[in-house]
Amino acid sequence: MTDDLARYQRQMLLPGFGEEGQRRLQESTILLLGCGALGSVAADMLARAGVGHLIIVDRDFVELTNLQRQVLFDERDVADAIPKAEAAKRKIANVNSGIRVTAIVDDINHTNIERYAKGADVLVDGLDNFETRYLANDLAVKTGRPYVYGAAVGTTGMSFPVLPHTAGSAAWETAGKNFATPCFRCLFEEAPPPGTSPTCDTIGVLGPAVAIIANFQVTETLKILTGNFDRVSRTLLNLDLWANEILQLKVDNVYEKTDCPCCRQRQFDYLDGKSGSSAAHLCGRNAIQLRHRQQADGIDIAAVAARLGKNSAVTANEFMLRAMINDAGCAYEITLFPDGRAIIKGTDDTGVARGIYAKYVGA
Image (cartoon, rainbow, N blue to C red; front, top):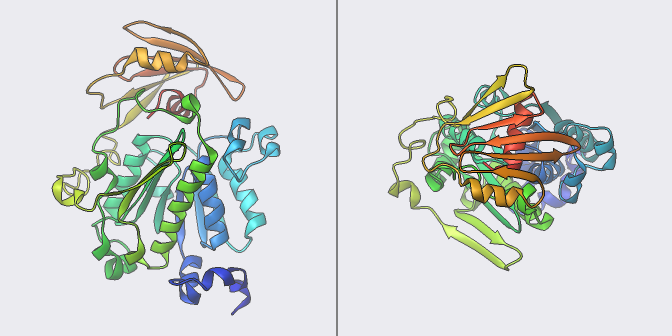
């Protein structure tokens, strides 16, 4: 065994790895979309496994409330206000100096995701909203790259590895396409309206639930990168640790039974910027307006008000909701309208505004 593989000796003993599998990992690139709860666990484990290049994209800074579950960060990162992507890069350098880490501090959207994904073999989900997941799924299906979905909130979590029916890399063309799965949009045709999905900042999150989902994602990613496509899970993992429920939902036939606009009709609405939200700076007001394009049923203002009112000052009527939010020591005012439009006052940074919306209103 060569010196560069010595640290992976225990891993290489496993079936499906060996020296060949480990070399594959060393030659691979992962685009990690987000480095919060799920992303920090995934980044740590992928680095320790020996993935050659990690591209980590995240828009946020480390906050004190992150430390309960975001394993790569510590109190010094909070005090120094380090961006999560950069903090992760610094920690990983002390974990495995033999791999390459690229840290990108940015808001992932349709204008930049293809650029950041250049050279990536797999997209790993560390996201906090449906819109960007649809965006990642569009890119995965369009380019034939696997996308490993994951989500956790409260005591629950879900995960599913998407293996697109589109031919991608040479390895996927020769070995993987026979194991293709439904895509994320096959499983979740439309995002729930904003305000209907709970978030970690409104109902909390159990650290072990996050860790289980992230490690499931990493395991599926390692199977894909080592060419063990026959071992990739064919089911949607759904768990609730507090209720002692762990389900494996069979979804293989969803692709055949649906006319998915993404993987069947080849419409990449999120990647093309036709769906999702748009943002506009409000001149002279230190505020960002976010407009969501697909809101068939509108938002239940009363439900959102009840949820936010537990921790924030909220005013609401049938026409709008206004909430005063303190996030990481900064004050923001959220004005939310029934059609999903929102004005986030207290910032002129689009990424910050999207983050506040995702945290307190939901995807």
